[in-house]
Every structure is written in C-alpha cells, then in structure tokens.
Amino acid sequence: MANVLPFVNSSTFGSAPYKVNTCMSNQAFNQSGSTSNAFKYTSLGLRLIAALAFLAAGGAKLAGVPMMVEIFDHIGLGQWFRTVTGLIEIVAAVALFIPVTIGLGGLLLAVTMCVAIFIHLFVIGGSPVPAIFLLLVTAGIAWLHRASIFNLIRPV
Image (tube, rainbow, N blue to C red; front, top):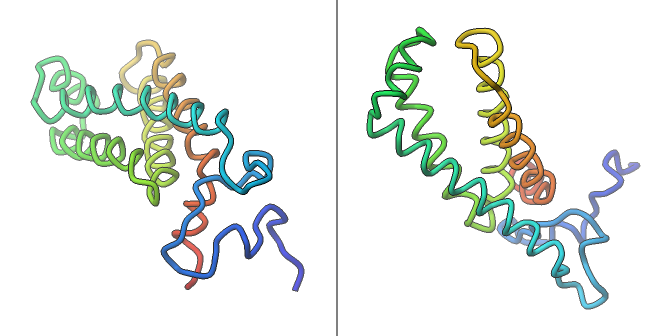
C-alpha cells in the first residue's frame, strides 16, 4: 500500500507505542540522527513565548480578574466558559514542556486562538492582532512537533 503521507515512515515513529520523535522533518535531523540546534532553539523559543502568554492569561481567567470577567460577560456564554478557557490554556501551556505532548499542546492552543480571533472579530470587537500572533506561534509549535501528534493518534 502506498504511503499516503510521504513524510511519515516507519522510522519516524519507532516500534514502541510510547516512543516519540518530536520532529517530523528530515531536514531537522543531522547525520547522527539528533535534532539540529536550530530546531531545538526555535522550538524552545516558541514554547517559552506561548507558555508565558498562556500561563498568564489562563491564570488571570481562573483568578477571576475583573477585566476577564467583564470580557466573558460580554461574550455571553457565562463564566463557566472563562473557567474552561483558563484551564485549557494552563494545561496546554504545561503540555508544551512534556515531550510526548508538545505538538498536541501547540495544536490545542492554536485552535483556542482561532476561537479567540473569531470572538474578537464577530462578538466583542477589539484588535485580534495579539490572538493572531499567538496563533502563528502555537501553529508553529504544532507544525514543528507534528510527529508527536501523529504518534498520539496512530493505531498501536
């Protein structure tokens, strides 16, 4: 059977169901099989930016900072949505530093930012630029670590 995803091969995922390479790109591996410094530092930089932003934002949501309460009142879904959003942001930010879940954390935060952009554009107004920036950062993390996402969803 032809490989539908040409960038995915058996050596990418390894034989054990828990073994994860956090990078799919063959270019990110040097001759010895270890990831390049550029990949490591790019990934780490993006993850630090995202983690700091989402830990702060998620913490503010969970702490019930008045500005957050007001924003979520304006959205109209109730304060449960603020709590769930804060929990998602904190859990996903922590996931950015667990090797097996880096890609999934980035993907979850990217989806969260897509929702935030939509809400800014069509519900509460205001500039969506910070959410767009964080979408680019988190989508970059998910892309760099897409092998870990594929590894989590593939059948064992």
